[in-house]
Length: 156
Image 1 (cartoon, rainbow, N blue to C red):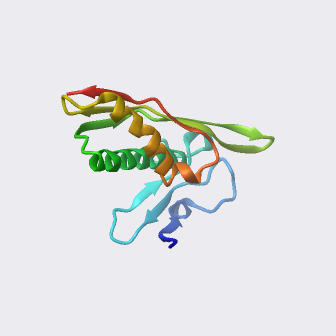
Image 2: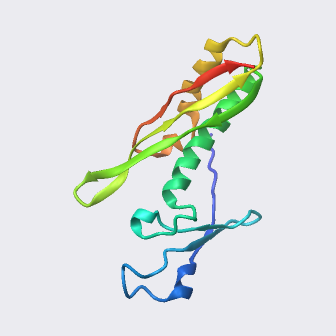
């Protein structure tokens, strides 16, 4: 049986308060994302595209979605395998470049999770679960570029 999950949000360009889009260099790129029952997000474009560097941009959110999805997939697998994860931190990075004339997009993302597991844990087994987490990550399955992981597993 196929399972479907749906998601909804409201997005509004709040930059309009500062004036219309009459000049590419001058209009505000600020926007607000609202999801029922959750804190709102105020964002902008990347500073390279004349956005506000103090605000989250779509590229940040894509990287965060990939990193958090991998982490949540990994933690679920560890829980099912009775591997006690004590700490998890990631230093993710992505590269966005021109993939064709006049077409920008992400070309790769690298996740660098550092996972601390309970002393006595089979470190090779804990490390191998990163590949399975990658396979089941919904967000990684939704993008058209490689998402690599360079995990470090330590006992603590």
